[in-house]
Image (cartoon, rainbow, N blue to C red; front, top):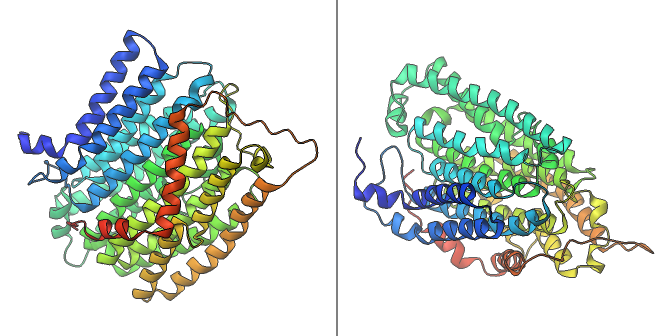
Length: 478
């Protein structure tokens, strides 16, 4: 299979990020320089983001991949998230006692895998991209390996991820054995009739493998420990880049392959969605650790998003785009504050809620950003999250999935309690309280990244029309 010049244009963002990873690796081998490595990483990701319009204008997609509106939106979100994490990592890793440059190399590899994943149109590409995304994450989560909690989180994620990969591969094997196809369109044609139990079993195993990556209940056991133990930038990759790429793959599979639309499989996904909405919110209620709380919160949000998979149709694609963007920008805000407050000298993040008690009185702008992020995750009006929640409820109503709509509403009410608990903590004041905020040494780039996130949350909440029009105008191949 030969690649043409047009194929290379379509692959431009992925090639730029992969080339940047090679450049960073050669740079580390030649001379270590933390600032230089971070600058090369940010430049490479920004260049890849700027090349997206050129790649989307290519008349055809590269072999084994498809570059439609879904892939374009996914690539843009992956690159924006990668840029934010790279920019924040420089200040975060400044005090880290150990090699710091390899973290950017792992980040670039993970972003390359995510870019391949959102454009996958073949089970082989899907699997290779998923592993390229996952393997760097093992290293990133356990990056502070001298810290027991970080090492434990990395090992736990590695072992459970390997089990999920086994389910995924077995599911692919079953489907391939019955259809003889790996390319998604041909595979969809092969299962167009009444699917037999082997194909349904293969689809269910694929769902288990992807469900693990999305932390859907009951495949969520790794989430709180890995969120708490991993370094904050690694956890941010898990919460943004990894989840959005895997969710878009699941959505594409459901929309393309009719086997995923079979009654009992959709019923199973509906049950998992409901379990995730209630389980994620209830488990987050009394978490004393902010990263664990965000981990459980992400389970609930993935449950809400599954409504788009269940209902399907053109509005589901638009809803996914709006919800994913609003969720990711709010998550970046929350983790951005954690990265900014935490120091890396000890290898432990300041993730306990007590670390943020009275933050407003020492750093009002950080408290304001965390407040905005929590309000957005809760879906409060005038923040970005409101429109995401509005879209997902409207989609459930349009599909007459009333019990799922009820689950979203009840889950959101439960979620309001723990999001408000975090906000109240920020403004509590204790006599003689000393709150250490690792503000000194943070560069302008980190502060600018946080400012952009804060403005985005507000702007999308007050005037979302241009963004919604952009998402609605994307040409979906599915």
